[in-house]
Length: 207
Image 1 (cartoon, rainbow, N blue to C red):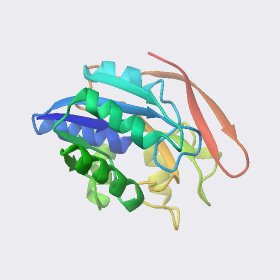
Image 2: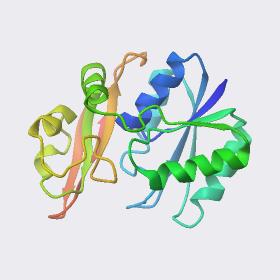
Image 3: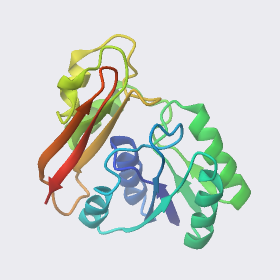
């Protein structure tokens, strides 16, 4: 089955990609470059996803969207890719999952969310198998000390009222290595910004 994975480069979409590959599907990556503070899509380090696609040896399509036209843009891209299914890294956001499920219904394809309602066991699996860095924080208790740092540092801090998977925009991540990567991405430097409430770590250079 040809599966289009909505791919942001973060831990959840990388997990969805690995799941689809393990299931034996033909995987293509659909990456959305949204406006900043998008309600639907991950924003930081979209350009670096090209290195991840290369590391996995997978085809990638990147589309630009606004908050107003994201749906029609994604539908058009999927029509061109002609998948039999779409997979996402949705964990707990009904806002996101319901909209992707609706697109799948419109196109007559299946919708998969292998992390839906995942718990601590899946997080431990990710921390064990993936090399994950924190690339954005936007929640009370999450400060600049976590930017560009391994996700495990944040998870082990056990911050109250922060979702285990950073769902809902509390934080974003980037995966530099996973068992199905043919090579590890080496991050050479970060550009970190912090406005007192939220912060972003952009990858300055990587090999």
